[in-house]
Amino acid sequence: MRIRFTLAVIFASAIALSGCGAKKEAAAEVEAPTPVQVESVRKGPIDHIIRADAVLYPVNQANVTAKISSPVKRVLVNRGDHVKAGQLLVELESADLAAAANESKSLYEQAQSALETVTRSTTVEDKGRATADLQSAEQVLATTKAVYDSRVALQKQGALAQRLVDDAKVNWVQAQGTYDTAKRHLDTLNSVAQREQIHAAQANVDAAKAHYENSTVQLSYGKIMSPISGIVADRPVYPGEMPASGTPLLTIVDVSSVVARANVPVKDATVVKVGAPATITSPDGDISGKVIVVSPAVNANTTTVEVWVEAANPEGKLKPGGTVRVAIKAETLQDVILVSSTAILNSDEGGQIVVVITPDNIAHQKKVSVGIRQGINVELHSGVNEGDKVVVAGGLGLDDGAKVVVKEAPPEDDDDEK
Image (cartoon, rainbow, N blue to C red):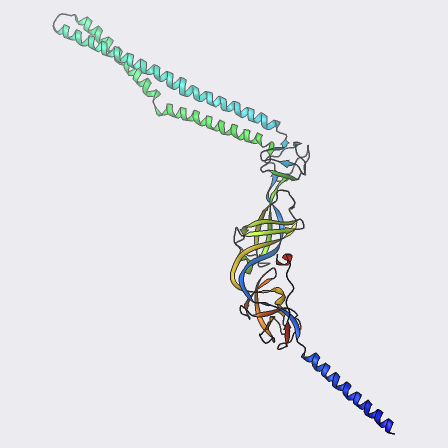
């Protein structure tokens, strides 16, 4: 009996000791602080980067069309060929236009000859001859008048017969008539009618010249030149075909530079300025560019603003029609509150929070208003102050008021800093 009693006491003591150990272990689990990593809230600059999907377009494009309706004689380039501005691309049948140009040239030359006849033969020579005739008639008139006056004086003195006076008068009257005729002839050459004749001849020359120039231009339309330098992207016509009016014969694209057209939300577009630096990202890598157009109008269907980013494309890696991603550096904000993106957590009540660790190693959840994000940096508008310690690792599921133990973060690699 004593042995059984002793065993019972030993067994009860063992159970009691086991229960105390379990309670102490549970208490230890409850009270163990949560290990976390923290960083200090800091102030610094941050770039406002606006990102959007975009479609690539060539910096310049020309759909080459014919200005006249005529069959294609020959095509001198093929798709993929590089062409220069002013290079001959297509020839159209233009024999009829060449004949019309030659006819117009002949009519122009005839009009010039007629004007020459009116201005030089009729005006210069006739006017010179008429002037000489008038001067000669004036001299004869003066001479016959002097003779007549002399004979009249002698006749009054009785030294000359009346018959000789009468003969001198007849000569004077004839000379007067000749002078009057010559004067009227010269006046006629200087009249308005004569000037109008010259004007009419000049008008004929101008009309013939305009017709000739027009026919020459029409003939030039038979040779179609490249308006820009670039690459032949499309060539849908062949010799012998009659292209429909307005149908492109060729499409030339200049891809030495490309333009990425992105639709940016209105709230972001308000800070985008022409000339802002930007990056175009494609599967082939990143290319630096700049903003060249910010549309002044808002697309009513998408409530976005179209922004164009231009970038050099010397190797032609970027192809028009492809989809890329653009990143526009809209502005740089100075002295803003910054934390790492890993410090931002989603709250169960909605919104976003960070966990601030006070000097007594107690965790406190703080609601924050998030601003711009750039890489691992996030701007906070409210909720924390410069110098606060926020959890960047281990904060997920951490209760407000929980005890923590701060562990040092592992050293960052250079790649992480970049």
